[in-house]
Image (cartoon, rainbow over all chains, first blue to last red):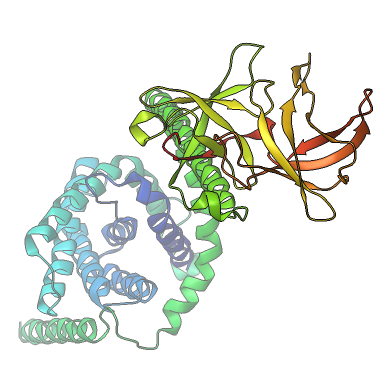
Length: 169
Length: 286
């Protein structure tokens, strides 16, 4: 339960930061996507099922918050959660290099889904410009991993947000 | 094995429908569409104050940091802005002066009534200089031979007589004021019985330590009925000044020591201390 409260708080924090502070941290016109990072971290420690569900709910909330194209981020974050969760079952989580790789691949894939869904839904987007967002965003998110992943990993495995069986609560 | 295949098919179907649902949803909630979004609105309302606070703090921090990083640039910018301010101030002052001059010219359009003089062509002029010597009451205006100004042309304002041109260059003219002892004018006062009382209007202005002092005065025969408040006009005699240009009003009348004449002290119509714009009447030196 604590995990979900923690995720909710972090999600709100991420939304606020995303719409305020991160505007000033934009590099090459792209700001880091902290909600995406949050979903990836969660899924990477909790598996594909929970990861996908978490991605779907946070994505939907983000969509509602943004207020248009409902489902775009939901789909993208669902995929990101599932993908990162799938990596969880295959890869060694404690290694920072692997986390970097997972974040890069998952970020790029999820933003690719945003682009795809936008184009598939018939929006007037330029796909070339879309790739100019995807790669910098994936790189930017990856650059944030060394500062954030250890904290999350510790919290998710041994700290405040770790999984507690029912009998422990 | 069978169970796994079914689950794969199911998964594929679910994925397909999820994507389909998402695409349909995206399509129908695009920019400009108005759909009920209570969850989003609630979220926005709740986050707005928080965002406001974070935003102002961030902007503050960013601006302070930026000012440190960009010190050289800001200093340069400051310098150039200062220059620009100076430039704009100068321009603004010029425009103000032009507006004020325009207003004064407009004022001058309300002229005194004299058919004799306004029938002649005239040019407006600005006073650019006053005589540096202490002995003469003259001014210099920015109109000269190029504008048709000739020696002996009368110079007036909307209120009355100023003086006459005594020297002309290409683009300037020197004018002797009626205040100068040399700038004598043949004047006339209408007596109470309607007859004219003629005399020479003479200035006895002297430069005081602080301001120019003195008065215009005119001597008239003792028996003439001249009273304070009477208007003194040019008589038209002597050939320089046309008839009926206001000179001033009689301020007081005193008896001459000889007992034959009365001296009328005259307050000029024109405020010579603040003289800035005048008209030169182009009589062609006639």
